Amino acid sequence: IAFAQARVRVQVEGGEATVTLTADAGGATHRCTTRGGACTMEGVGGGSYVATAQPAGGGEAPAPRRVMVGDRGDVTVHLRLR
Image (tube, rainbow, N blue to C red; front, side, top):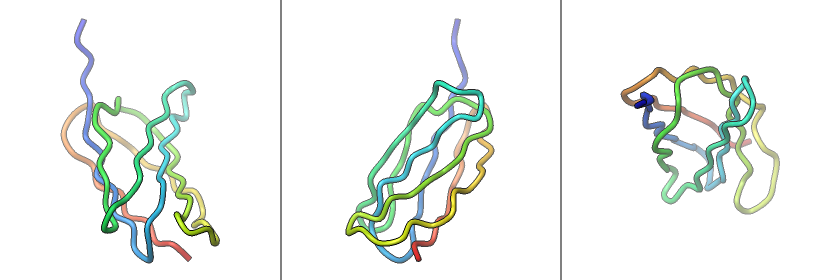
């Protein structure tokens, strides 16, 4: 059985961060660390996720953000560090 998966491109403004997507349905977690303000997560299953960002140099993280990921294709998530 093949499962459809998407690519999630993350754009972070205001610095570098580790970004985590956690599925609302539980279980699935995806993570990437930005370089030059961007990173990509491959093989993300469709569904509702919560995106969180932890600034690389410490500091205050932005509020968690709800993200919908389709069954295939590309999704871009924009986050701004405080």
